[in-house]
Amino acid sequence: PEATPPTMDNLPSLDLEAFATKPSFEHHVAVCCLVFVVLWVVEFALRFTAGPALAKLVGIPELAGSKEKILVGRSLMSFIFMCWCTYDGIYGVYEVGGWEYMWDQVPVVGGNTTTPAQISAGRLYLYAPRAQRLALFHVTWEVKNLMDSIIHGDGIIFVVHHILTGVVAYLGLNPFMQIYAPFFLGVTELSTAVLCVLALFDDERGMGIPALAVGL
Image 1 (cartoon, helix red, strand yellow):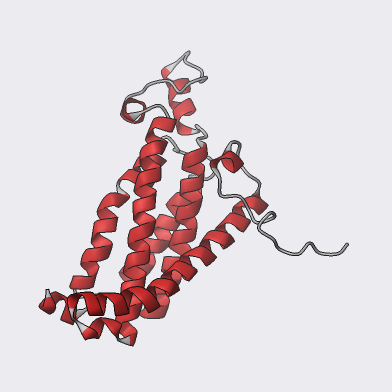
Image 2 (cartoon, helix red, strand yellow):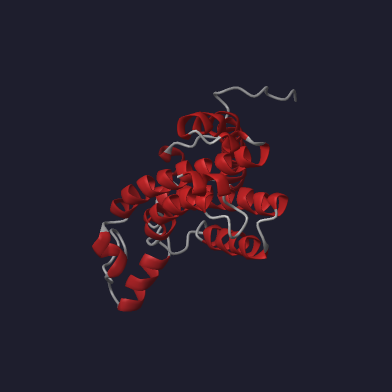
């Protein structure tokens, strides 16, 4: 049969409704590919716009340099993604029942409440659409950052970090421990968003811009 040409209508859906039930493996792969491309497009756009714009704004011409533009693009793209994770994570907490559902052994809605073991199992294998999407986005994110760390020589610590974090996010897709995913893959990323910006001022690890730290 003749292949269907790609259009906006047959792109994989990122909407929460597409995750109402656990999507197929093919849908997971398609979403990962789409998110991967979007992350790269956003980063490249920021490389060629944010760096020069910041150079003019703060009066530091070094920010428009080739290496500096890459650092600015990576950092700002990471900042945007982590802010989205935080936003989606807050909604996700309430999707699984609220803060008390995360920290107390409260039976999940519709779960078997006969014994403590059954309550725990219900919480452990709860399926939450927003948590599923968040975990899938994180898998994609870690794959991209693993590639970035190798390409840009971030160091073995970052390579190991992205591999392990990606594995943790992947395990959550089964589903597994999704009741905690909105917090640990979402809300806590607020601190990561801040670190993404602060990294531009840290040149001790070769990931910052010396002129930026001196200039400001």
